[in-house]
Length: 174
Image (cartoon, rainbow, N blue to C red; front, side, top):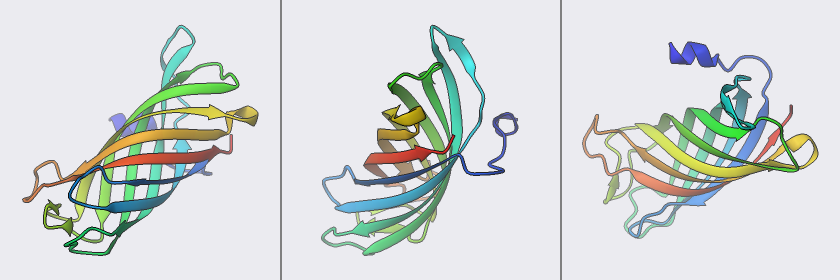
């Protein structure tokens, strides 16, 4: 029911984003690069004091480069879809800050990157918390930091998971 209320990612893309970052582990050295497309839900919930809760669908494709010692795979590909909830200003100003949370599904081409980072399967859940700001003409540019955790939520063993620090730059067409 929640997914129906948010609406499907249909029609023209509302935004694009590029993101990159290292993993947060002392055991591995994994960097990733992602490109994504976003579809705004065009909904406003919990409007109060000039702020509201909104959100968007985020569809991403990514490449992981693994430079870890004792790595199990040197590269990995991923596809992900994530509904993202964002607390943002209702009337944008020159620099419009926001907070966001997202949790979605990721499909990985490999099931491990290191003997201490085994995922138990290709299907993973990804959750993130982020802080950022929209700026520029019509607030079309979007710069954010995200902390992301990927794991299989213990549906398969092993479930070592992996965390990332992410820098993301986006552009909204409308």
